[in-house]
Image (cartoon, rainbow, N blue to C red):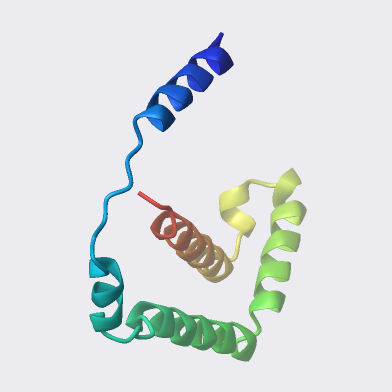
Length: 109
């Protein structure tokens, strides 16, 4: 039923479609457009990513995350608040927060 309606609408619009002459207006507009610039946001994204990656590697981010995960599993039999390294928890929370913010900002509205 929906396909049939879509087909009917397409046929209706196609039969009433008229070519509008613009006397090369479109081409003149395209010729007069300013040159495309590299978006500053893309450059800033790359610079921020490079800085974050450098700092993550410089301060042994993989080791910190590994230690945090291993402490978390080791503390399974104990009360969690007594055995967790809060520095590792803070760093892991910060990384997850940054990833979440980046994902939200990259959504197309």
